[in-house]
Length: 141
Image 1: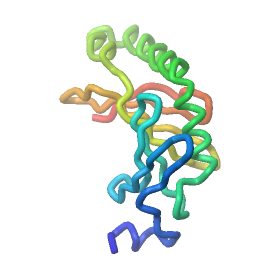
Image 2 (image 1 turned 135 degrees about the horizontal axis):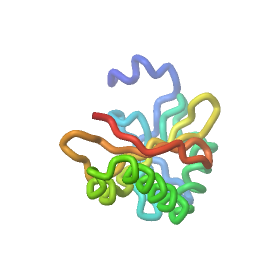
Image 3 (image 1 turned 135 degrees about the vertical axis):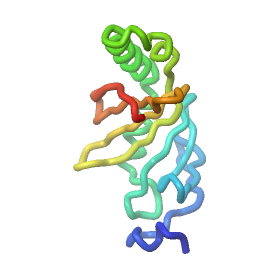
Image 4 (image 1 turned 60 degrees about the horizontal axis):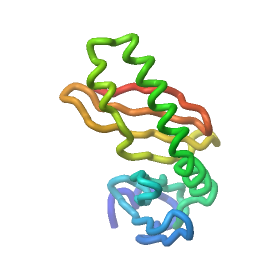
């Protein structure tokens, strides 16, 4: 029994879930969710106390990852805003691209916390979405 089991108080996650559209999803205790790849994206689906990824979250993830052009456009628009405000970091900002999309639900809303690559020595870049709205680009130090 892992430490997560103590806090979980829900169903034990299935180790492997084969989703008809997203493919092979593998449970990761470290990430507290199922990991997969789809349409060139690495992603995770958060655990919601049931043995399989919640269907509502699966549907949201599928819909969003099928909109690759929209995701790319939102990232590019956010990068342009940041370059105008921080021209000294323009080269670093220009290089950013999607690394991993983390899908989860918070306050009954589908959300994404997307890690970006490459990381710099000082910053771990990310972009966030709530439903179909880009909430912005940022970083953690």
